[in-house]
Picture 1 (cartoon, rainbow, N blue to C red):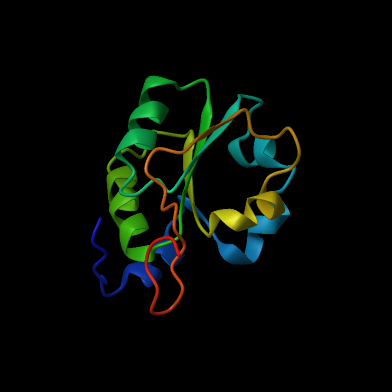
Picture 2 (cartoon, one colour; picture 1 turned 90 degrees about the vertical axis):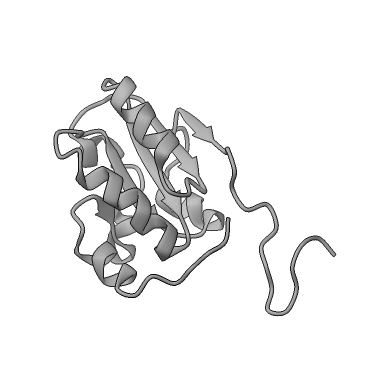
Length: 132
């Protein structure tokens, strides 16, 4: 997927009620049942892209909670736009973060399943792309 910078994406994400923000992410560790206000199973999608898969899951399975994780603001914004069209969907939230920080945000045995559909397998260093 080619990434394009979308002006205002960070601001839109910061203003959204559907995004758990960086400054409180780690406070949610061990408390996701409180966040969703239920004891339903919790599933995450790492590298959710534009959010089509996880949004459809949340719609199809209202008795489970879903957290979509994406590290790129411009991509997360597209998922957020889909989410905002579904205000009654109470079981879907987003995080803008790098997957290597997942243990800081989710406690042991807190996540019931992880979806890894098209997450970026090759973290890029400046000037380098792909495996070495």
